[in-house]
Image (cartoon, rainbow, N blue to C red):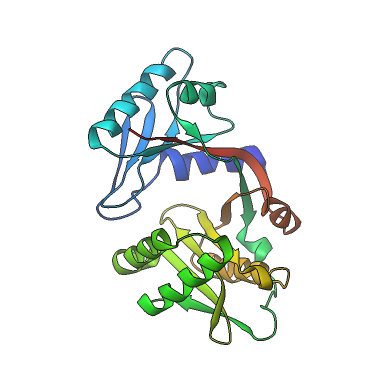
Amino acid sequence: MDHAAVLALYDRDMREGARPESSDARVERTGGVVRHVGGEGGWNGVLWSDLDGRDADAAIAAQIAYFAGRGVEFEWKHHGHDRPVDLGRRLTDAGFAAEPEETLMIGGTSDQLVDAPPPQGVRIVEVTDAAGVELMVAANEKAFGHDGSFLRDLVLARLTADPDTIVALVALAGDEPVSSARMELVPGTRFAGLWGGGTAPQWRGRGIYRALIAHRARIAAERGYRYLQVDASDQSRPILERLGFAALTTTTPYLYTP
């Protein structure tokens, strides 16, 4: 993999050329910034920017004014290679709060097409209806220990309005949900995003995480996607590196609350 070329392709496809996440959302390009304006309950934020030391502060102030006028919290999704090099400091000085840093990791779908079945007694089921979403949310809450309402709303909305852009999975041990994950597909790009992979503590270390990646890779490859993308935490980065994913840059959410 040519890391620089793939990162440039990612910036062009997924950030500068971003698509709305739902039918009631929109993407706007203004003043060197690409921003996503979410629909009802959707995500608001800056996806990409091309700034320098002369115009960065004015661009930041303009986005604060815009989203404050809408009365919503928003995120500036900062990547480690973004310009200017002190953009993170400028965001903090303007009143943003930095969330934990993650690593943008990319893997080829073809590299993940391996025989990686879940452990004995566990099966992976594709989620297509409200009952399946509840199983997925239950697994997510066991894995991460927090309320899964956001996941419920997101998956239900996508399955209803744009079912071809999401693949939702739950791993069941008998009838018990023990792990879940989703994949977000952006038509016209070469990247499929892997999100939310989490396993209940007592089921970790048995290969479920790997099985969920391989399962999604097969679907992505069948639909013509070349790369898998993950915003990896410090816990998942070593696992993904062992599976052949490459770390291309860092990504840090900077949140602003009006």
